[in-house]
Length: 274
Ligand code: ADE
Image (cartoon, rainbow, N blue to C red; front, side, top):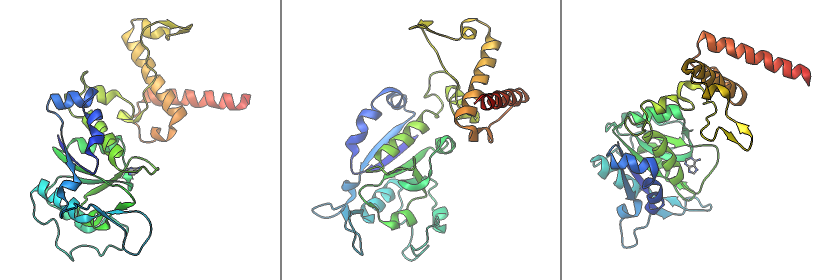
């Protein structure tokens, strides 16, 4: 997958992208990241990328021209949208013309106002051969970028960071590990938390006893079917305790439902002991 990241701070990415699985994915040519310095697309002697907001107020707003120029040169189109086409910039809904952009390459603005990034969104994005991520900064990005250039807006959570760079790294990481061939063990991404809708249960490795805390016996028993059953039940137990909301959408067998009924009874017993 080719990922273009538009940012004013390309240097922020180098350590992360040169380490661990991201480095491996790049070496295997499964991930090809191009850091695009927004300033390189700004015109004039001073290559200005931000301006104070019209109407006053604090902070600086990222100008539209360098961001449009960057995306258009990457996509190879001279004009993404004609002036006057599309919404007037007064509504908060995703504007109609977003769906009309023809390149098929997702152009994603990272913003706390975006739709919430999740494992499902990561799977969705992992099916693309390319994506373009725009990292916002300062007080925000000129609204015309949101309305007439971005095809999607993503937020990684309900908090405000100083810019979209960390969010872009989160998206690139979560998407990259889903690209076939990136993770070592076949199917590793399928079995982890959120795949199949459940949180993963506990994991243990050597030593068998650490400070007197021992590994559950079943894991050292050598009974593959028992271990699988135990793992499934632990995943159900953990999801039930920590994220019961996930159970509503999870893929559950009859055995799973029976085990959840046992957990529910345990809980009722606990409550009546209080
Ligand atoms: N930029 C600043 N905060 C952000 C968030 N929570 N998600 C995505 N981009 C952001």
